[in-house]
Amino acid sequence: MRQLVIISGASGGFGRAFALSISNNKIPLFPLSNTKYVLLGRNIQSTNETKELLLNQQDGCEDQVSVMQMDLSNVDNVKNQTKDLLDKYNGVYDRVLLLNNAGDIGELKYVHELSEDLNLVQDHMTVNVTSCFIINSLFLDTFKSIDKIIVNVSSLLSTVPMSCWSLYCTSKSARKMMHEVIAREHKEKLRVLNYQPGPLEGTNITQKIKTSGMSDEETQKAFSNMTYISTSDSADKLCKILSDDTFENGSSIDYFDE
Ligand SMILES: NC(=O)c1ccc[n+]([C@@H]2O[C@H](COP(=O)([O-])OP(=O)(O)OC[C@H]3O[C@@H](n4cnc5c(N)ncnc54)[C@H](OP(=O)(O)O)[C@@H]3O)[C@@H](O)[C@H]2O)c1
Image (tube, rainbow, N blue to C red; front, top):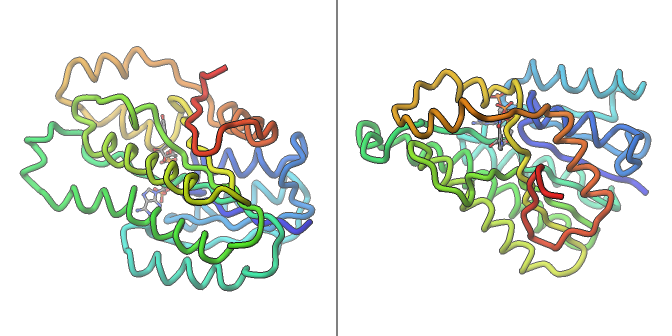
């Protein structure tokens, strides 16, 4: 079987951990031996580092992993680059997995404070929602007849409102619903999962949260009492869920769920 795995936000954090976990032979789902990996990243240097780690882990060959620079803030580029990428791989593979992992937290401000620069709202939605829509749409249109898996890297905040997190809560909620609708629209040859990876130790997003100086005391307290988990543990858990393949299509599963 010839397989393809596409991971957005593969420059580090959860995206990198997932690439290393799913390609590992521990769970023989998408071993490097019969899988082509496409790593999408805004930071090309860090994404190339992920490629090196992946190849070193498995003694792989250069052409088993491709890297593509993609900035999700530019809708036209996302459309053109994704189309070129998918056209190239159309008809070549029997099974394909897409991890919609890339995302930003946006400005951590009260809604009334966003009025200082309302462009922030559109910019955030472009990265977290519109670009993901475009990638999903082209992906589904290209790979109509083969087995597909789409995993959205979601968040507890897609359902739990938190002061100062309106942009992120709104975009993650929209993204979760987007994937639920996709699951409803495609009942065959498609598995869809919203995975909530838990509070992740040491990623850029986590670092940004820690240094953001949120003005809301309650929110600050919630984050300072948080227990963080490693990206590799969370990625391993997602691989196990995919391997067991018992989840309900379009459902949401959290790292802490049984
Ligand atoms: N950290 C947590 O506690 C936590 C909890 C729940 C859910 N999540 C979700 O997990 C996912 C991964 O986050 P992470 O914690 O691993 O943080 P991360 O290391 O910062 O990963 C975020 C990824 O998204 C990419 N990205 C951000 N803006 C982009 C843009 N405009 N164009 C292209 N790529 C862009 C980043 O690329 P660059 O390297 O170029 O910035 C990076 O690869 C996100 O969807 C996040 O919402 C995280």
